[in-house]
Length: 427
Ligand SMILES: *Cc1c(COP(=O)(O)O)cnc(C)c1O
Image 1 (cartoon, helix red, strand yellow):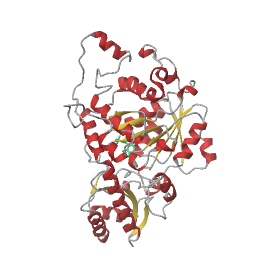
Image 2 (tube, helix red, strand yellow):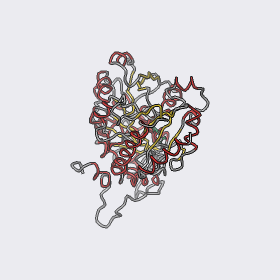
Image 3 (spheres, rainbow, N blue to C red):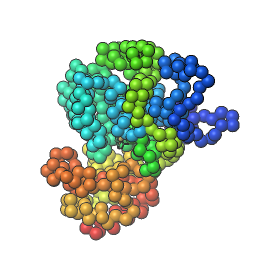
Image 4 (cartoon, rainbow, N blue to C red):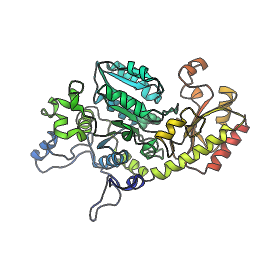
């Protein structure tokens, strides 16, 4: 499978049926798995044999889909989680605990920001946030002796900043810690962060991977390249015996390719749950089959919409890295040469009031908190997710009162543009 192009891997990686087996990935709708002897099962519990015993930790449907995503990202191992939030949490909690510190880009999904700045802080893990376009010195100053990872988003939701992945990877590696990248918006079709030095990738599969607004889910992929054993003091969980698994040392038993994901499965899934349901995993697998086709169309539509609105007299500004005048055009050309994603943002003249009128008059595009879906949807944060804030507070949060997040679907672009046109006329 390794030598095939990514569009082929979307359909065939992760599952190869043998003679007479189902063509499509089967849904193993089973909580548990049967064994002939207690001894057989005991080996699984000791991590001496691989196999399934309880779907809170692992399920064969999930593993096929996770293997497909690992193949798309070029990683060594992956696991599915019940949501993108669970993936972000596990990706860090697998290597950090109370008393540790993380450096994160400030241009990240609002839910992730809250998880880091409020909830994980309560667990004793501190975060320092840096602007994605900070100087090398500012980035350097954010590190502490107890820093355990660096985190960022390839394309930030909803700010649409493009991260300089190489810069962040170099800084992380200079301090002996991995770079974790949330690659939800770009998907592995448009960017594979491992090729730029990232070590771990996370996804909200809820978005483009599922693609059809049918299931919430997440994924964590390990590149298998970060050498934890060079820093045993920083990563004792991976480099010293785990008493809760009869003293297994994950890096020794599973190598660099398997240690991180095995630990996350054996400890975090065992203790916290939050595994994706096999039914939802099946839907993600189905969505992945058309991911390459869909991403092309999303990008084509977003480019056309961005070019249309940028010349419209009722539009104040537009953000999309596919526009040559965009602040992130050059980084986009480097990291996203074939397209970025289907999400653009723009401001309508007349501020909050005009934005509300515009939204109310859209007919094809629906108002949703969802984003990155095959059907066009949009959100006006000032009157929805951020409605409790006044204009000054909104600006401080990096969201202008007139900002509209517009997620271009895969409908015909002429219809999407016509919808925007008639809604703008209503203002
Ligand atoms: C939606 C989203 C998340 C959270 O994912 P859920 O599946 O909603 O939990 C994380 N990161 C990004 C970039 C997202 O867009």
